[in-house]
Image (cartoon, rainbow, N blue to C red):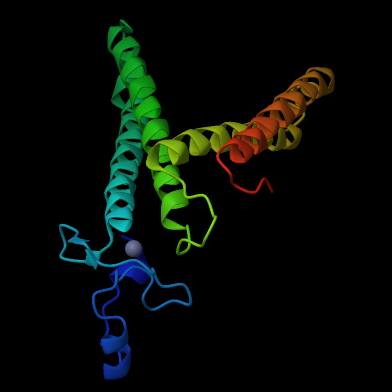
Length: 196
Ligand SMILES: [Zn+2]
């Protein structure tokens, strides 16, 4: 749970009454959750189902992030001393699996965040379903990744990448980013969201 969500200092009585039964996420911020508290997290935090799911997924992301750090450290350390290379082969395979799990967990958490960030329903406005949010999150992450890769490539030191190779790759990534961005806009339109 985010820091603002877990802070539980006493609120004035009037405010307490006003938000009785409401999800406690973001309660101390300018943007408190508008939903009913329908469940509690394992640390007894009363919240809506959407925030409970986000909380659970954020913990999953943390767990995979931690596992990734540990396996990378292990590979840099004891595994690099493996004379025969068999352990290194298996460790690298494990690292790939953990990277994949981390990417999947991050995409699911991003999707949960898109759902959580929706305001109260208004007449005629489309609501994201869980399935739609997961597809949209995958498309957004895909598009953002091309943009980030392009920036990283542009910033890479000359010694790492020659200028000709660099610009060929930058061009390819720019084209991929544009296609992926168009896929985001077109999916948003398909599900009735305003393309930005
Ligand atoms: Zn909530």
